[in-house]
Image 1 (cartoon, helix red, strand yellow):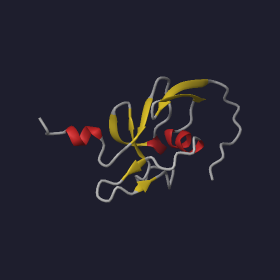
Image 2: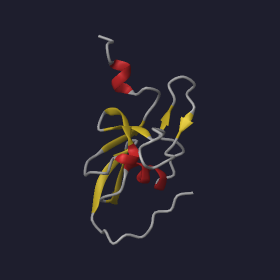
Image 3: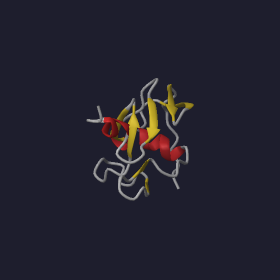
Length: 103
């Protein structure tokens, strides 16, 4: 389904995707990493819990939302990997919104 094209870029960064440490090419999007790792989804919807994954790859559809560095609702297609980045699939509205106003 998704094939990463060969790159002249040889520099890699280390990220953590759903608790798993990965070495990925510097300068690619978080969505590209998710697709290349064969994730079946990047988020679930808040109402029905249905699974969603990157679709437009240009920041318009918001189907690629993920929790990035602890912040929910981040567009994975518009975010480029950085060394040490923590990335998780988002469940529903995500942890930041679930905890908002609960105290």
